[in-house]
Image 1 (tube, helix red, strand yellow):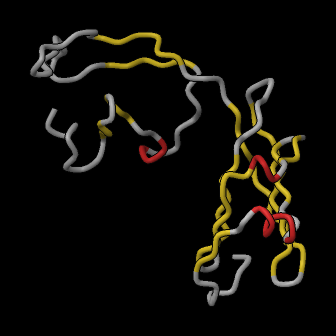
Image 2: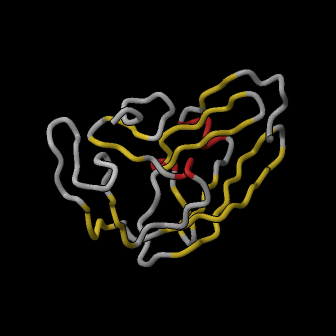
Amino acid sequence: GWYSAETARMTWSTSEMISRDLRIKIGEVSLSVSSVVSVEVTGGELKVVVQIPVASKAGQVAGSIGAVVQGGQKTSRFVFQYFMSPQITSVAPNKATLLGKTTSTDGRSVLLTLSSFPSVTSAGDVKVMFGNTVCGVAGGPCANM
């Protein structure tokens, strides 16, 4: 991390971001302080939430974040990926009874087919929701559906 373990917790104000020369770049776009939603330091971690700039095409871009920390400029680099919005191309079956019964083989499931979905490396990369109900959580409301 950029900070010593003694740093308990701290939230940076706009003036703190400016005085620490916070610099964030996504692709060719240098973000202004107005694009920063929040900056929080917890233990040895710096957590920055930013508004991502628009992109003209899908793909990976280089990113960097830097700030004056403990008397020196520190910079970290990362890769950020833009992707097309996924589109649902089919739902089968596309109906169920109020009790959740479908015409699928198991009588409970629905196959959702999407296009333009970004690469997934683990189930943890995906969140499935029906309304405000998050599915896939052990013991969650969708487990018994």
